[in-house]
Structure formats: structure tokens, C-alpha cells
Length: 229
Image (cartoon, rainbow, N blue to C red; front, side, top):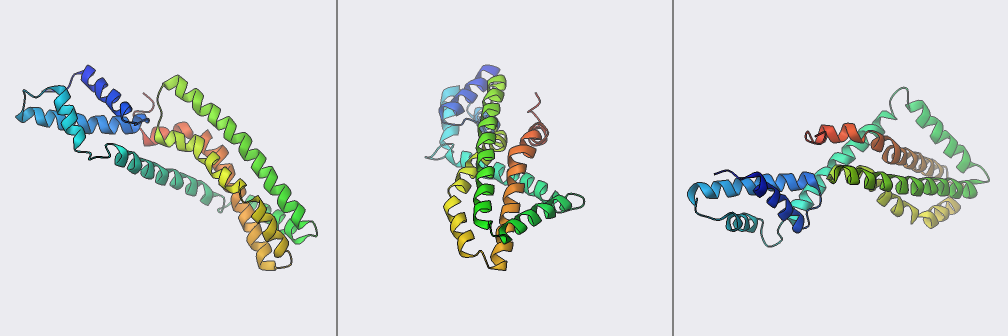
């Protein structure tokens, strides 16, 4: 016996009822449940769909789909970080390494000057304001995309919302940046380290807030063959 289309849709609704929000994970779980149900029907053809569904669900344990949700999140976060790392590496190859070195030099000269403290705070505030603006913009884009497709994908949410969460953590460190700059103003190693940190921060934010969202369609089609459908 094979499941009908209405039963497949019932399984999708069942996953949503159990707090699975993302369509890609819903699809994986529906496939898993459907296979289990059809295997059960091979030996117990009299078993009702509801009873078979509940038996298949019990195999996930007392936490239900929570483990699957966590594993999917980890897998997609790993993929997202891979995309981020691949983009970052490009900025250390010719010809983009020139821009990276210029960015580093700008920070190094700024932090070596008598205005180092003020410039560090100004740079940090500029990055923070830009990141907040982009976070709001990307959140709006994400909501519009969901309204059009009526579906959420784990990687899509990471691309459009991950950077915003990271920016909150960075913003909380503004006081520490001020203290570090003030204490190590005359230490050449501290100046180099701070310059590297600001260079990396700018590159990572640019990739997270600009490059990856602009490549979202390509990355999502690579990850999910059914996405374009």
C-alpha cells in the first residue's frame, strides 16, 4: 500500500503541529514517516493510517522531532559557515587581497595615531549602525520571501537572519573595545591585533550582510533541488 496525496499532506500538517517550521526538514521527516508507514502496511495491511502514523512517530523517542530539528540546524549552520569561509578566503587571494591590505593599513594607521581611541569608537559605531540597518532590511526581505512561497527553509533563514544575531553579540563589546584601545595604545602588537580584528570584522559583516544574501537563490538551489519548484 502507498500513501495517498491527502495522507502525505496530513503528514506535513503533523510535522508542523510538532513544531517543525522549515519546509526542508518537514519534507525529510515526511519521507521518513511515509516509508515507515508503508513498511508497516506490508506486514499489517489492516493497520489504520492514524495508528501507523503514531507508531512511526514514537520511534523518534520522547522528545519527538526535537533531535531532528537540532541535527538539521547544526548541519545547515555548518554549510552556512562553509559558504562564509569560502567567500572570506577570496579576500586573501589576488586581486582582492589588495583591498584587504588597504583596509588593514587604514585601521593600522588610525590606531597608531593620537586619535586612536576616538577612531576605534567611530569605526565600531559605523559598523554597528550599518549592521543594524542591514539586519532590519534582510528581515523584511525574509518575511516577504516567506509570504510569496509560504515556506521557510533552514539555510534561507540563516542567510537572512544569522548575521543580525551575530551583530548583537558584537555590539555588546563596544565598551571592551574602548578599554582595550585605551590600555594598549602604545603597544605595537596590540595595534596590529586590533587592526586585524577590525579588518576581519568588516569583511565578515560585508560577506554576511551583502554577498551571501545576494547569492541566496544560487546557494539555495544548490542545497535544495526542489527549491526552484
